[in-house]
Amino acid sequence: MNALKDDMDKVRFETDRTLEKTLVFKNTDYDRIIDAMRYATIGGGKAFRPFLVTLVAEMFPLKRTIVAKIGTALEMVHSYSLIHDDLPCMDNDIMRRGKAATHIQFGEATAVLTGDALLTQAFLLLSTHETGFSAAMQVKLIHLLAQAAGADGMIGGQVMDMLGEKIPLTLDQIQTMQRLKTGALIRFACTAPAIAADAPQEDIDALTTYADALGRLFQLTDDLLDVEADAALLGKSIGKDKQAGKSTFIGVLGIEETRRLASACADEARLAISHFGLKGHKLRDVVDLVLNRKK
Image (cartoon, rainbow, N blue to C red; front, side):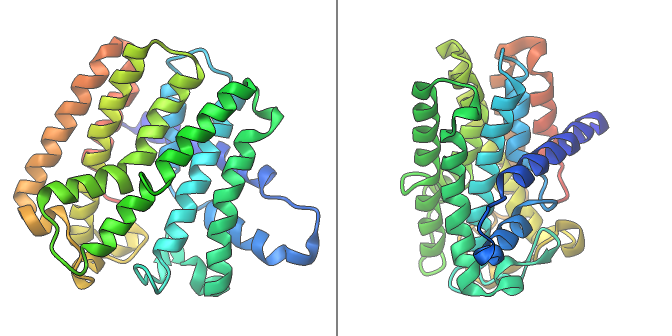
């Protein structure tokens, strides 16, 4: 497990390096937005989604430069979502990734624009000729990322999350919310490298099943951490879901049943990745990492 965490640290470093190269603009008249974009992305989170991109890519013949572009674009979309999540009109959180949320550091208006800029920059990064793959594949990946991040993906899940503050959601609705809000980007992370490598459909199907189970597991453990984690270790506020009246797995199932469901999702993910035999050992280790995570 320590080796896996070392691998994650390497991906975090590589993602930061790509961000540093990407988030540079010639016009100094709007340095503030550049500073905010770099503040919200570089040296902060775990780069979990780029890490998944990298691990999947290791199983296929894919250039490292392509992997870095896909992972960094995904990290920018994820970071944009966190910036907007933290805004007073959304989750109203003052802390993110162990430091002041972007709107606390730069103001609400700049935070909104920072999120907008990161989302746009992600598609710009995937569309540049330096990516190293064909124009047709660029269009396909941009299409898939737009689906994952859009109204029928992450945004739809966020809308359901806000709705769940006003009316109790059923378990089925909570599962749908998770599949969209959390699961959509994880699904992209696990399938995009295989698609970029023109992998067989059965490989893509196995990765899709794995990603869906892993996404559910990630949200289940996230709900548990919001109740049980140490705020300093987690890097963000805890207990905020209950305070906001959000509909969560714990609210419907209770802590013990949520743990049981998390274990079942872990088993499902392990079974799916067994399709790849020994090649999938790191992705199997990721399941344990998520199941037992403390932050």
